[in-house]
Length: 296
Image 1: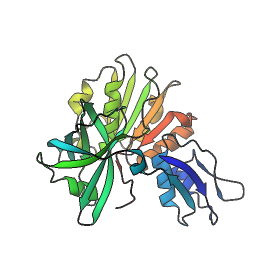
Image 2 (image 1 turned 90 degrees about the vertical axis):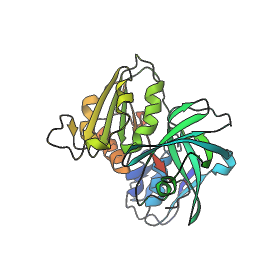
Image 3 (image 1 turned 90 degrees about the horizontal axis):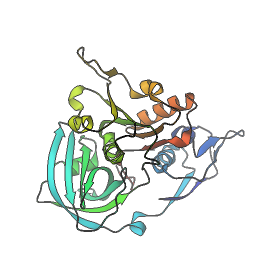
Image 4 (image 1 turned 120 degrees about the vertical axis):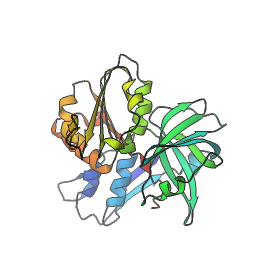
């Protein structure tokens, strides 16, 4: 949880912070960055990226630590399954009583040869203190390398659920934007919405074989589902390119936009939405894999 954001002396006016989080940072008339809002709700990830991207390290973010906020519990690994060649699904169970809101994440306390570290993963399904996560497996990801050999016999240390990424209403049209495993928190949100609520999902992946959860998505009532391939084959009849290109045709006057995916998609989508004069407070974002301790 972010308590305060400051811009200290030494700003060079590069505009990086405004690019990452324009709701909080702006380049003023004197050519330096200034903090224009102290409303940090649903902006934790954008503010963190602005802080880390600052080339002169003048952005100071004061946080409440997770050890102050939440307890650490032991969870049993109930199942480990491959959703495709690049994606792992882990089912965990914990005896502790949790209050879960769709969109929230679980914090995993992990250990490897470099030492202890934490990662946050969005919850796709939650029922009776059992929850599922979907995790992208890549060679460069410290957390996915630590998790890819997980088995049913293992236990994990967790803190859950956490996060402020959640539905603001249940009636108006929802436009969900996702790339890859960014679908995770959106699955939980889609399942929580009433059948009569109009829902649109734009999900971007590279190729058709990268998809998962297709049957589950197709079973969700009143969902207008559009898969967008950035490396489509000749036989693909769906959307192509990047999902940000297709956003304008799905915006309505009462739309709320919820986005989870890679930073490039988030930034491109924000630019498109700004050009459409869409209210910035109705564009809510998070990221599927968060390194809350800033370790790589």
